[in-house]
Amino acid sequence: MNLSTGKKAALLIFLILLIDQTVKIWIKTHMTMGQEYRILGDWFIIHFTENNGMAFGMEFGGNFGKLILSMFRILAIGGGIWYIFELIKTKAHSGFIFCIALIIAGALGNVLDSAFYGLMFNESYYQVAQMFPEGGGYATFLHGRVVDMLYFPLIKGHYPSWIPYVGSEQFIFFRPVFNIADSSITIGVFIILIFQKKFFKAETEKVAGKPKD
Image 1: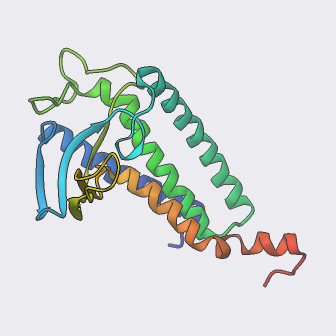
Image 2: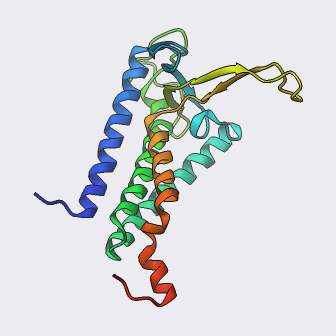
């Protein structure tokens, strides 16, 4: 059965959300905060942490900032879904549509954490969190924390002592701990940047007054 571009994009979003949420719920219900499993020595580690703000562990303005960020994400997701429908109607390049689907899926994955995890789980500090605990969750709607677990400290060392401010301090690449939703957003953005000429070829030719192939 041949699926339309729209159905393929919807399936892609669903599969990424399914994998992202399955992994996060498993981590939340099987690991305590800070616990880790080494998958490939010191290069690939499953490290459980939670992110109060933006992607890759960045922070944004405390509780009020988090609420603003969550609302912005919801609006951005709504705009992204509308944009995909417009792209499908105008028969845009399918690769570009799938990249937007990757970005939407990643944003949705992290919004679900922020919106519902505070209601669904209790704290993970010094204990494995329970799902739907009797006493309620650890936060209110839209104030939950995003679960992160993927850690790739590929290169470790120390900054040269002559570098101001950070001299002799430890250097780790790649330091941030992230999740599948973050990866989905990053992959979508990078593919757009790499293949933008191909994705926007028809639009460029329209502006230049050239006929389409």
